[in-house]
Length: 124
Image (cartoon, rainbow, N blue to C red; front, side, top):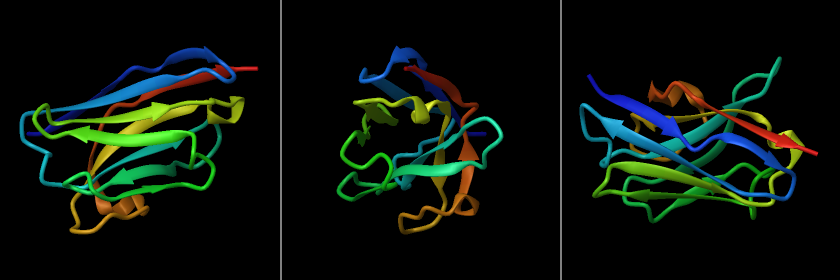
């Protein structure tokens, strides 16, 4: 059974940076597109970023484009989310997930494996 484990969350001041990691174990995820989502209190889960299986293509939500960068290290079977210029509205639990389809998507129903989430809190 495969598993995804996020790390790197924490408390940071507005304007600061954090780097989230998502490590796969149990099975390889390196041949699948991957995504990051987030869910703030009393809000629905929303798409943040996605990366193709080979890392050549990426997609970002408009609210994070230019501030966040998704990347992956296939050898380590790990996906990263570099978050810069953080804002209080970025506060949420961040989840990584595997896309079981063949193309990148923003639709959460196209993702089958999810991590447990890591809390990111941005203070003003």
